[in-house]
Amino acid sequence: MVSEAEVEQATRVIAGRYRLVSVIGHGSMGTVWRAYDEFLHRPVAVKEIRLPPGMPQGQADEVRERTLREARAIGVLSHPNVVTLHDIAHENGDPYVVMELVPGSSLAHLLRSQGPLDTTQAAAVADAVAAALQAAHQAGITHRDVKPANVLIATDGRIKLADFGIAHNISENTLTKTGITLGSPAYIAPEVASGSEVTNNADLWSLGATLFATIEGHAPYDPEGDVIATLLEVVNGDVPKPSNTGPMAKVVSSLMIKEPTDRMTLAEVRRRMYGLLPEPGTSPFTLEDITEAESFIPAPKQPEPEPVVEPEVDSTGPSLADDPGPLPFAPSQPMLELDAEPTARIRRGVPRSLIYAAAVLLFLAAAGGGFAATRYAGGKSLLPTQPTVIQQPVVQPPEATPPGEFAVRNGDAATLKGTKGGGFSIKVPPGWDTFVEERQPKNLPVSTRVHYVSPDGKYELTIERFPDFYPSRKINQFKDSVQSTWPRDAFVASDPLILQYTNSFESGQYWKYNTVDAGVLRRTTYSNLMPMNDADLWVVSLTVPTVEEDTGKGALFDKIAPSFTLTP
Image (cartoon, rainbow, N blue to C red; front, side, top):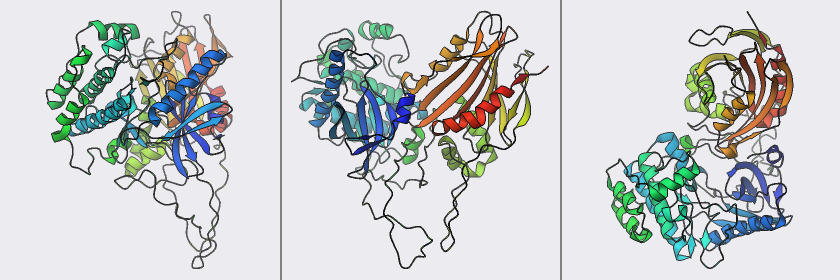
């Protein structure tokens, strides 16, 4: 999970060279950071091992060895469809794997946001992954975790296979102790699921399962289902068949064969793709496809350049840094111009509450179109940056100040079925827009949620009421429901504090949690969970960009939440 410590440590420099910028995500072996190589002035990905507190030294050494195994697995490969290893750095005795940063989307996010790929796109994925596996197998490496999440599609259309964290080199001893995973149950081969010997043929099945998801839009087996049940289905059940009847379906069926030696070879996969691929030098993916599928990783803050004196330009104007040379990952299409501060781009898989909030903001500022959504997702103002005027003195903007006088707003959280007792009042900063939705959270009663969204889209206040929550439920069931909507590695919660709100069944709680969407959209939510009237649970929450969490709590939540009261 993404911890507060990781947020605070995002300014560390590893080995005096790699500045950690932001958490991209978590793999099977640790935390993956977006970092900046201060020697070569380029963005990189840095994989840091993650040791649970109290782990015995022997197990810790084993985890470190797995980190080096991944490095050795990638280090012997030099292929355009495999993520490139740059360096192994050491800091305080721990190894850090420094790899190529691929700006763009994973295939998993692309499928979630856009559904099945067309034949040309699927063929491009099949050919690239098969080529990467050919190179790995020729080097004696079995990947063992081929799945859509490990297939990266760059903004310039390049397709790369990533995460060799559990790869096996036949020249090394296999690590078999507790805690070593064998891949994702929805994509692993039957022989792997049954505990048999793992060979290169296991990657063929996983490639077939990945291509199944590519043309169908979903995995061949339920990735969210019970792990044991999924493994039993993989081993003993019938092999799923694609509903798509095109040429890719035949390849999938020829790869997903339970007998390992009967599976189609990688060379044959690539031969079948030959007539389906796009024209040489072109990509079947557009820049819009990739940027909509997953938010870009925000660019690291560059070292401040030495001022450049230009005699033709007035000294009050901005000076430019020396030309750093070509970008390490130049896209095939012009990219949208970014502000000086990094801005994240929204993808379609954001939480529902943010989608509704974005809809309100886009309605109010429709002319902004996709730009408005981009600014909203990045926690930025919807107004465009004003250009600096040459020959005019540059006036520095004032420090951000807390909102002005809050206004009392009256709301109603009655349900559509007419459940009464939903009146409330709360102080809200001026100018915040409101909308109401009725929700059906998993394993909880129907709730009504009233949203208040700041004009710049950076902050969202929600008042949620669960009628008839008591006596059959507890607050912890609500918290479990919230956490279940996020991937395990994208949610971290603090220990709750007891509030004065109470009824006959339990006391209220103050609860804070952090979320990371696609490794980019980092938000912090503060909540008061309040049992009221012996039947209802009320939740007052404020969500802010994590980079502003201190200000968000002190200047907003601590002033808003205490003002909440029920009204007749």
